[in-house]
Structures are given as structure tokens and as C-alpha cells.
Image 1 (cartoon, rainbow, N blue to C red):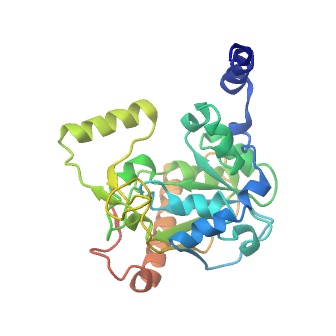
Image 2: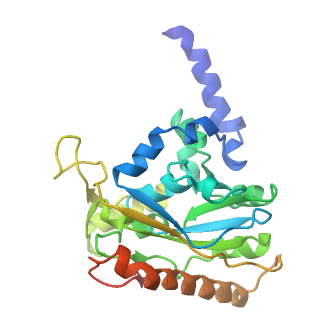
Length: 293
């Protein structure tokens, strides 16, 4: 239909050159986030949200979500929808799940993503949200694409040692850190281990460098079968939102020592969540939580 081409060209110019919504908190659509289908989505696994502490709505928060898993289903359900009634459980807190900028360069898909309240994970985007008033908060899947390569069932291997960006964001903006640990996220797909010296691993790392993300070799279930497919398996996921680590005063130019000190506190909180709940929510684990890099 040739008469649609002018509209398509205008739309492409708009998303590539003019629209700043991904850097300004997205384009949140509340009725879509509250659609009852998301509650059925949460019940499919099922997913359960465990709240350890109330959050003061006069503050801003950075939720660190672990682990990445293959597709971060728990993060989407918790922070990108009301499938687990987040805003009722934490009144006054307005979370925005963050993702790579490349997701906002795909026509139409970008609009679907932003309707969830999802925004870019760039520094400018993070600071804009955190400085937009009390209660405005961000959720970051800290381990990123690299962690997804380690998301085997029965394990919880976190990529966290080198992750200081979200720590610096917290200090600079005076935002409280909230560790969030999802027991069961790694059970949703079978992931095939690729040796680090193999060609497949090299290709995965090349894709990660070029595109900013990569995917492990994985298998889930199909619509009419349980043995093969791309859909997540029906395994329970327990998302524990831990106690906040408050930043008493913003630090405009934090030193590496300050970053490391706060990171150490954060890691300790993650480990404490694991110790409190591992026997209840990860009884079939093959090993303990490990911070591998």
C-alpha cells in the first residue's frame, strides 16, 4: 500500500531522531500494566513476591534484580506489570524496569516495551528517573547478558564483582539500593554449557560486543509439548525484595573505596537473602550461590 509509505517514513524518523521517551522514563500505559492477563501470566509459573520491608515513598530506589536467567521473566512480571501487585505492596513507589537502548530501535516493539514502563538503562535515563521526584525508582537486571550464559537450573551464579555502575548511581543520586533475588528464575529454561574456548562461545561474545546482548543456547517447552520449545517451563519463582540499603547523603564524586564499600554491603545483603530462603525456595539446588565474576 504505497499511501502508507509517507507515514512509515515519518514514524521511522520520529523513533530514530526525535523521540526521547526511552531516555525520559518510557511511555508508561497504566491500563496495560494492570491488564488482568498479567496476573494469569504470573499464575502460570506461578510467581510469588516476598516483601521483606516497607519502602518509604519519599525516597528513590534502585532495585538490583538477580539472576538474569534467560529472559528475566521475574523482572518483567514484578517491575514491568502489576501481575504481582507491586504498587499495592509498595504504595508510592513507581518502578521502571530498564533495558538496553537497542530495544528502542525496533519499530513498534519499542512502543510495546515502553507501555510496560520500561526505559533505557543509559546513565542519562537512570538519572532522569531518579531525579524526577519522590518514589520514582529503577530496576536493573545487574548481571546482564554475561550472566545469562551461566543460568543453569539448580545453580545461582551471579555476575556482580565487576558491576559498579549501579553502585555509583546510588551514591551520586542518594538512592537506596534494594537487592532482589529470584529463586527459580534459572529453572525456567534448560541452558547448555558452552566451553569458553569454543567457537560458539566466541560467537556469543562477538554478538554481545556488537549488539550489547547475547543469548545462551537454551530449551524450554512448546505449546503442545513439554520437551522442546521457546516457552518458559512451569516452575515456581519466588521473588524476594530485600531490605533497602539507605544512602544517607548523595556523594557527587565517589571514590573507588566508597564504591567498593557500598558494593560489599550490597553483596552481603544478597548473600543474607540467599541464606534465609535457600532451603525453602531452592531445595533442589546442586550448589550454593556463587559470585563468579
